[in-house]
Image 1: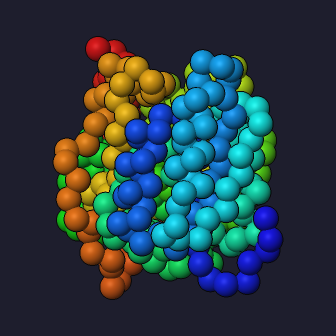
Image 2 (image 1 turned 45 degrees about the horizontal axis):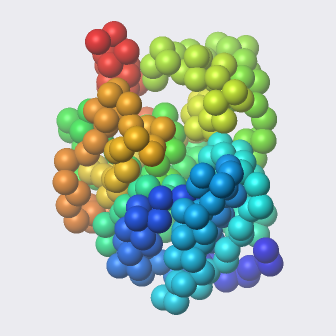
Length: 286
């Protein structure tokens, strides 16, 4: 991947199988006028999914509506390893990037919104990421149409900078333990977090490390006042399609909120941690 000198912020897509779902994601990108798409295609696990993997690659190779860079893997790495290595690779060549998994569909205007946010806060170390995803259960009641800052990062449709990604090559447990040593509450956003860190390696999870990475450095994630993105594969082909996870389905998506004229000062909204604990721990005790 060559070093770029232009100011285009790429969208990184991590794809595997499920061509019917990937086609919807690509159509949403086309409707959102994505200018540059970098796709990491994970390899098949065996003969069982080889045909679907090839169908997805055919869809990616057929893109003619934007510039594309395609990386096709010979073996299967799984999502966690793929995201950590792929984002690291892209951010050696680009100052910032926007990251999607292959079952997240955005509404038109999402790319412009995230690019505006990334450009606004690119030199502010307090802000470590931005996202297009949110949910009524975690949106503070008084934000109106303005974005707000959350201390918990996002793993669905998010963007970051090379400066903020540094250190994400470490195991999630190590990052969590550093948080403990600094007196940070490792259950601030839910009692499920330490368990997820312990399971990060065997389950090939990556997001829990990203959450603790934000907490370790007092980093913030900018969230919109309403979601611009939705997960569309709530079936048995997705690891997220559990009874608990399906409670995170959003209402039908609307047009994105307006890009702010006055962006908020980077301070975490005081209701965020409590909203997350109620949402997470309430589900865990049902």
